[in-house]
Every structure is written in C-alpha cells, then in structure tokens.
Length: 335
Image 1 (cartoon, rainbow, N blue to C red):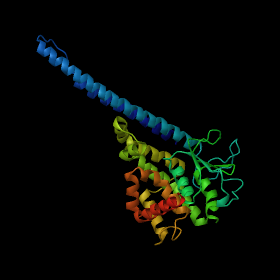
Image 2 (cartoon, rainbow, N blue to C red):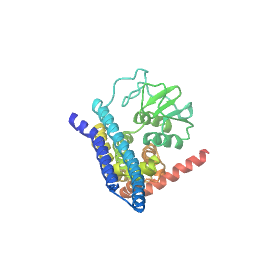
Image 3 (tube, rainbow, N blue to C red):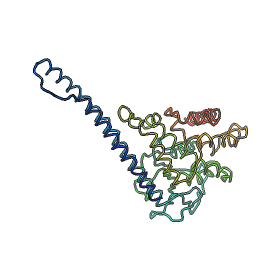
Image 4 (tube, helix red, strand yellow):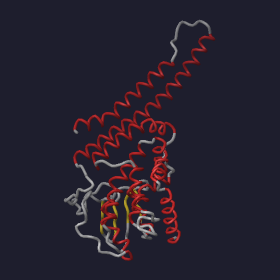
C-alpha cells in the first residue's frame, strides 16, 4: 500500500506539469517568427500579430496556471488524506478506545456516559461545522425537524482537541463525530432507544452512502463547480480535473471505509427496506429518513445533477418529495 499511496499523491503533480507544458507549447506555436521586413505595412502586421500572440499567450498561461495550481492542490490533498488513512484506517465496525486530551470522544469512540436527557431538556445547543458538509447538513436536518433551537458556528471548535467537523455541544457536553452524535442524539429526540435495524441503516448511511455520493460529486466537474461556487477559469479547471479527482477520492475513501456500492444500488436497497411505506419509520419520517435525506440535502439545494441521478435511478424520487414536504411543513410550524 505504501507505493500506491505515493503514486496516488504524485498524480496531481504530474497532471499539473503535463497541462502546463501543453499550454506553453500551444501558446508558443502561435507566435510568428520575426524575419527581415522592410515595409512599414509588414512591420505593422508583425506588430499586430505579436500583440495578439501576447494576449493569447497570457490567456493560456492564466488558464494553465489555474489548472496547474488546482492539480497540485489535488495531489497534496490526496497525499495528505492517504497518509491519514494509512496511519489510522477507520472501518465502519471499528471502535476507538482512546479519549482525546480534552476528555472528549475521538473519531469512532462512543461516549463513556450516555446522554440522559429528554427533548424538552435540551439547551445551549451549538453545532460547529459548515453548511455544505453532508454530516453537518444531516444533523441540521434532524435538529430542525424536531424543533431544537441551536446555534450554527462555522468552522472547527476553536478550543477542542478534536479537529474535524461536526462537533455538537449541548447541556454543557461536547460530542464529536456525526455517527456518534446521531447514535446518542436519536434517543433524546425520539424518546426511544435506537433499534438495531435503525442503527444498522445509520451505519450504512455514514459509511456507504455518504462516501458514495461524495465520490460521484467529485467526479462530476459541472456539479463540483456548482457546489463550490466556481466560475471562469476555476470552473474550467475543476471540470477538466474532475474525472481524475473522482478516482483519487474513491481510492482514499475505500482505503478509509472499505468497499461501498454506487449510490443508485445503495438507494435501491433502501427503497426495498421501505416495503411500500411512505417512510422508513411508517407514516411519518424518523431518524433514518432524516439522516439519509439530510446527507444529500446540501447537494440537492445547489441543483447538483448527482443527487437527481441518485433519486431517479434508485426509485427514491417520490420518497424524496414526501421528505421535502414533511421537513418544510415542520419548519413552517416552528416559524
């Protein structure tokens, strides 16, 4: 695996150099060779040609630079992610046993003391994260549906030893890792222990569906540019890099989570689990429905084709529309 990680990390660098050379050759080919010219008209034509060539070259260099920087960033990011995955391979069924220095749970580590709270007792709820993050969007969907007031703070927790997102604070306690947060939050929100079947679906949403839909997003240049909000040369660069980027991210996620199916195949399994019901939990949405819906909600809101392909291909479009209506209804009542 050591060699494959190094090869993966170097792909972005090689791609950037290749693109830079291509653009440089293309630009230089346009420049005419100055010969011996005697007439002022010929000098004028040469001057105009050189001016156009300079503009053309500058445009291509700008594009090449943008693409090269993007490719270098891809190589660096994938190298760092692979190093993390190699140092600490997190599997869906693994459980971390060490707490962080600040006493909070590490990634994959469950709480030493469960939350003994009711929904009405929740207070001082804060979530640290980003709006576009699928795990953060999932938690936000749950909190909104159960009418839990919370403060959204963008970025990582400023004082915690846990350096990822999301982080949830409630009633003076801090919980890290979206999977651990959901496992401990659901009994508080619903007033019932999470069932074994629901816990298994939550595991599958976190460790199968989420990486699958993200890989598909990264492999679709148009969607990725739309989701990030890129325009101009940056959008062109990401569209060119997307196929390679999707493959790289796929390798990183598989080294971290193991194998996972394409989103459409995963969605068909979930459709079968509905067994003809409007929602997984029956006549009304429950934690599993909210978890899945929230995971792709941010992508759907941006109009990404990736989510539409998932919903149509899996047959979950009608379920999605019911979920959207149910969540909108809850939000309207709360307002």
